[in-house]
Image (cartoon, rainbow, N blue to C red; front, side, top):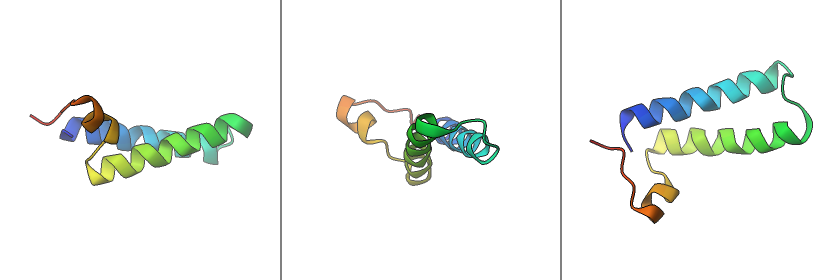
Length: 61
């Protein structure tokens, strides 16, 4: 996974966290987006996306 991909994932995870903390997203959407944020955070920090491996995609230059 390329550095741009990692940064985008981490920024999106942070954005979702801020939206949750400020109660912009609530209920079912908060849960769904929270799970997505955790996935984005983990894959961004680890640098490996299971779906990329499954489909043979690489964003690393």
